[in-house]
Length: 450
Image (cartoon, rainbow, N blue to C red):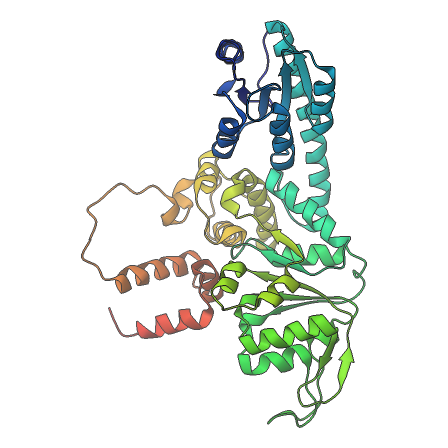
């Protein structure tokens, strides 16, 4: 019986009986599957942590830890992995329990090769149907949220957005620079019951410390030099809606304390005022740093961390969902071609492969910049590998100049990133993981030097 491997490519077989393990491995390999084996649950879990597995075929009755526990582990930790349980005891109760826990199929020993492969085929049909339905749902939801991708990572992100939109809790959005954290925040707001109220994004790192308090909470006339009139802050302007605090980790200790008080009391006090004013604002915050590490280092308040991190959402880096890159490229090509009033150029298959293999330290924002530049600057069609930025193209090995200072290496990398972003210092700073002030200081220090 020939079994298509579409939907299932890798199988983990778990059985404490060596002869059974050998037979199952031989039959599944003969059907075209990549097969891992384990003689117990502990060994199986170790394998699952190290390798991607589409299907687990496990015995129920095993010493030390039961196969039932393995089924539960898979269901609660690996939702994309299917399970078939086998038992030599033909225990209907055990099989029913395994199915209730999430196993797709069960087989009672002894079973024929045909019965095994038929069960695998049924699992494949189930998985294809499940993934097809999920992909359609992702496509509709992703388009609504302007989040493009058919990957599992995007599917999980869309589900997190939908759950967060149904809640009023604070959300902490984490992810590297350029992954689209503000896009996620907007999707949550405009899918929530506050959609008709304001969405106010604030880059806390871009506001000088001396002005941040009055920017957030407002100030009254005469509160400080230059305060010629009373002015509402971002909390007041987003009343009834959502306030998005980007780069929240950049806040100083005193500002963290003031933000914590607002979250606890749900009221703000304008700078220079003695009265508090109630506000109804949902807080979404974001950071590209590991906030818990900052808490442990004493650089971020633990109580504020737990206030902000009620619903955590992690935005995956682009390198972890490389299968989405061709779709993103087509989207950006269409957009920038319309802006440039030209026909959308094609990308060669080789160019797309290079883009998919690149690490994308600047994530989707970096991809957008690269495609924009290629659409504007490349006149021929299709766009091919030689048209891509130099750092993405293969370079033959050459003698490395070892005797260079750290400053020389840093300068070379910063200049390469600036060239890649077309001199855009804001984008370059995001890719480098530093703030614009630090980048400007670096550039000034090199002025006049060769």
